[in-house]
Image 1 (cartoon, one colour):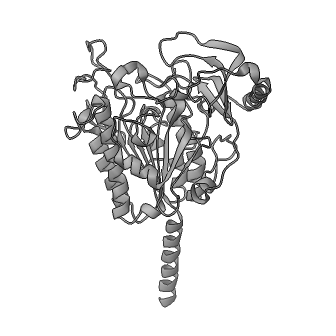
Image 2 (spheres, rainbow, N blue to C red):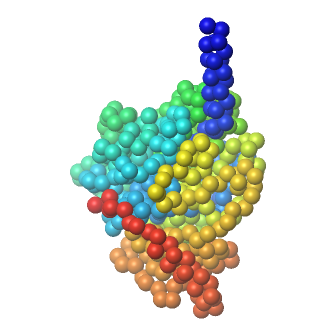
Length: 453
């Protein structure tokens, strides 16, 4: 009996040590938030004190990218660490719709699936937009808990909704029939969108408190500031930037609630929190479309404003306050999360993300390779160091056909982040290096079966 007790105590101690060695991971993903929409990224009108503090206490990225210019492919890339073309989560239809027959393929390995194998509790809260059919839903992709919308909040619009209602500063509360779902079951339809950010936040806080004694992964994907724009009564009419600012300021409050909960529960020093956005601002929505700051264009385009997004990493005591202008992307979060959680990388799968641990925890620079900008299944541009070449360009919305460029357009993003001055004629050698990198990349790409029909 005494021997059994000793063995049991040793196993308990070992289990506690293993869990302590596995940090919690929280990814907070805004929807359509622009590069210029936070105080710490230069917004003069939207107040974001919690995100500003997070940036001051952590690592702020100046050159952080989403892997796609619109919703569904960018979410697939974050959760799988792969360019969307590899999983088939891209195409001419651009995103999944309620009548789409595809979704994130079951064979794709997500962060949640990999971390569950090493003992993590997993939760998805907020917008999903990676499929509503069996095999593609959150509960099929590694999440033990799920609470949120199956796709964008402007889908399932009711018949007769006036033109322009989606981008209205006062959208109809009953204009969209999108359901609120918990673990695959509809609990409210239509979802009361004025309460979403508040309820998502309450759900996140509850999950953190319930799982504080074991490692957890929380994927917190906000609905806003995607149109139609809503905020709870406590935030309505409070921002200089109108309802868009109200929604972003409530999102900032939500981030503050998550970070405060981690502090109160004694989890801050062993929880990596990353905040970013799925793509740039939806500029055609006017005042409800946000800002990309000095970057060109926005959502839907492969200009910088469409894919360069805010990026903040926070882990007090582990990540030192700093700013980096090295190039990283949401795909790096997959590799980083698996490494921190002690999970094996999937076999026979091409990954495009890198482990950021040396940068995050040791302030070490990482080798900078090429970064590729896709619109749908077409490669439009490539960045190598400070240089970016455009082989095709197309505004986010309103331009029916892309413009092809031969020779490609070339911009130095350090000196010209707004991409106004094409210097291709003076730098043929740079273009040659970029074209060689593109050729090598495309030779290794095997497109997945298209999912966005």
